[in-house]
Length: 127
Image 1 (cartoon, one colour):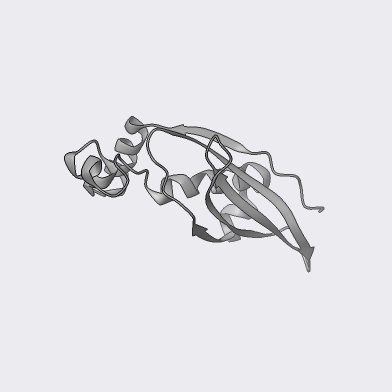
Image 2 (cartoon, rainbow, N blue to C red):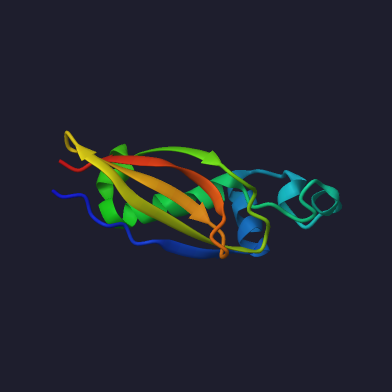
């Protein structure tokens, strides 16, 4: 199998989405909610959970590889800046290398202005 081109995934991460994620993740941290702590904190408004942003990369990889990604895909990323709510995020993956049956992609999540929120690599077995 030749490593495919990965279609980008774009989502609006708004406060209702963040609130639903906080419940599912059992994360009551007030920096993610519309609270005085979020607005008086270092970013001046609520911040989306990092895993909520990263999930868009996994969605893009799942769309391309399905079960192969779910069974053995791996991610290594660094967060570059917080995702301030509301924010439109696009996950992108560009083929970096293909060797020994493993495809490695450079991945990123960017805001609407193209500023990187996270960058890293994703690897998946394709043979």
